[in-house]
Image (cartoon, rainbow, N blue to C red; front, top):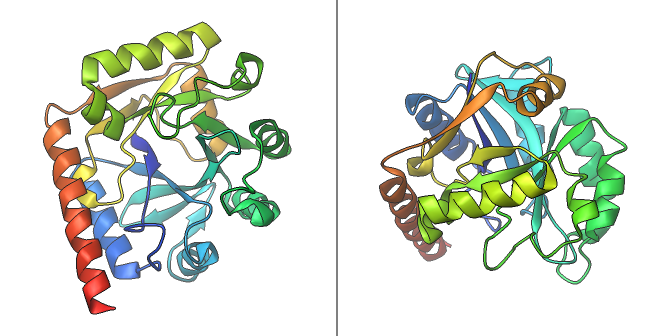
Length: 253
């Protein structure tokens, strides 16, 4: 099973969920060889509830994922923390909905939940906790206490940062950091626009149905990360198209 652990299915936080845009994204993910995605949309995106209400109305949910055009979509969120940084949470839809509800008072800058508080909350549910882009300049994680970082399940080798900071140099920083903490690394494209799919993927040895399956594959090392030789083109093209689409939408408004 080929999966991307960090994806977005909206153009941006400030746009409404668009089912046509979403289905185009999924079709393009499939065309890029992906069998599965973790849909880690920002927890404070505009009308967050609209996403899962739409998914529940239109697509089957079995085991621990939605199935759309033959692609498995594992529910998730990306959460901002008080100390600066983002954490990916992946799990069953009921657990994701419950956590999002309990975070409703922490969606604005200045009110984000502390890292320790988020960990305490997440550990009440059966979810994966992945540290997103730990060395991104604007939202790093490497500055946080190591005893708290060790409570995460894995760290994100992020397509955007590989493009911005260089594949070899950035990979080394992330792998060395994760190794010091005794944690695995998983790949995430961090795409908001379909051209970015496939820039980095995880090739699992077995198909996964639940968050427990995903955890077992990650912690057991039953996967390998593949970085596309076209990573720079994919990320740069997606960023440019996203910018144009956002400009078009503003003009239309």
